[in-house]
Length: 191
Image: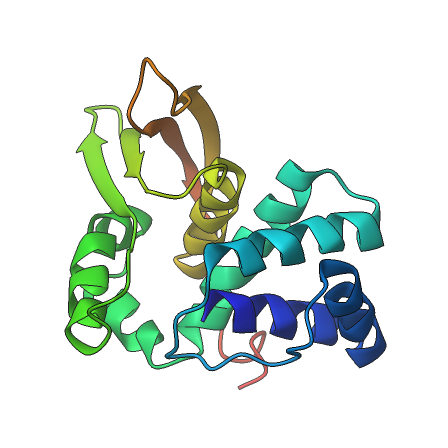
């Protein structure tokens, strides 16, 4: 589903010709991906590198932008209902990510999802522990966090306080909730 999300993002924002160019740069003949199929992680990394080349943006920025988009993309799929089951607030949905992944594993047992552990602090902030087999996805997680906060009508500030390395077996982020953005009225939302 991640690769299909990348395709969707590029075609929506840059058009099908850009997607073709990115696939050519990545050395891929495949222009579409099945949402419920598994693909080698190398394909995803090649696509991201090709997008960096196409947009002339650094990798962390591309990953952050896509992470923000991913929440919207996944939310519009059947996974959106799973995300919303956790609750309405940013913290509730963040705490529910592992439950959502557990439900997805029932239909896709070959999936290797990340894990999120949330330590909530008294001041309303939290420490997020992000565990993944995959390397280099911390910038995408930052984008995901901002995208999730936007979905719940909250503004956040994220700082990475530990990087997965020989000293740490996972990435750690501090997340501060700045405020709750007013949700649009039905008239403002175009309803």
